[in-house]
Length: 423
Image (cartoon, rainbow, N blue to C red; front, side, top):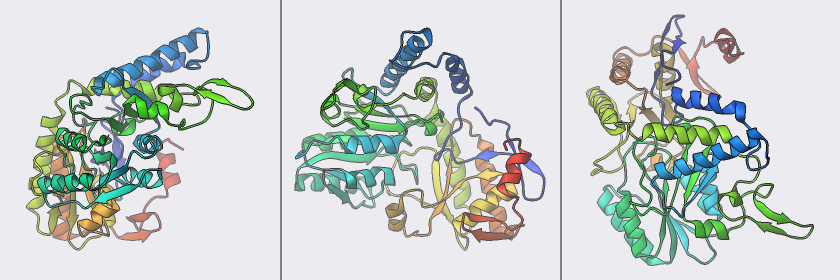
């Protein structure tokens, strides 16, 4: 894992081992992914646009990456695997592909903004179903909502980016099919932590991001059924997406090319395929369950600390834990953890404002998230740091700035980058 052994400066002038508990935002690259990209880049050429050796090699590598991603996601042989910039890009693409008159899009109110806002801009209507206290009642609410009027698509998260709770995807896809709807799964959080099975679980469309799956090279994926994608207007108009162009008309390509205009991101595609190949045989679930249990057990023993959940009956969760510390702004706690302990967590509303409002936390919360490089010691370090904060308060003085909370004596960013050799 790139970044293993990284030491970061503290506010008191010392350094300490970096404890990265912000994998849910962006995960560092796996070492083997970085090595594969370095191996490929000397052969970077014009994908699908040349007869020279670099172009031929690059074209083959790009299409091999597409096929590999499809296999790792358990896609149907007829599914399209379209490389995008990230999950947000992929969802916006799909939102523009829903056929006119097919019905509207239904989501829950627990979704990341990327699985809410694009549907509002699409031609299809958008309905949001209020979440219930249990998964079972939430499924009943969705059942009723899908029966109310024609629905084209049920768009659902695979795992909450706030609490890590996992939804029963096979049950959701079966529910949607009973009402003649298709299913889209936002797998940005799920894919780095669990195996994906598009065909086996009856998923029609799925999106994920490389930067959350140990391949932060600017690529994501939209995978799914071909008919909607081939019938829609190209997501981007430009070279590579066409069969023929005249002054007055254009014949667009079918297949993934239709929505991949411009020069493709070879490094991103290869990186994402390599990461998914490496993740496939690993025991991510057992590793993360142990870390999550250690963290939640430790935090819940601290007075004034509350861990968050969406559903009372959620039985499965990935390595993501959200919590609050009574009497402290989440941003201040995040700054304290970084400046005094070298621990990185996320603070705020996590691009899930409706969910945080439903949880009664319009000012946000804290989120710790694990990954392949996390250790049990990382969970213990966070618990110890929060125990110290609650018992004695922060050592440093902190101020609220336009960019968030920071130590009053924080080193300017330019100076820090220079000292780290990055400026």
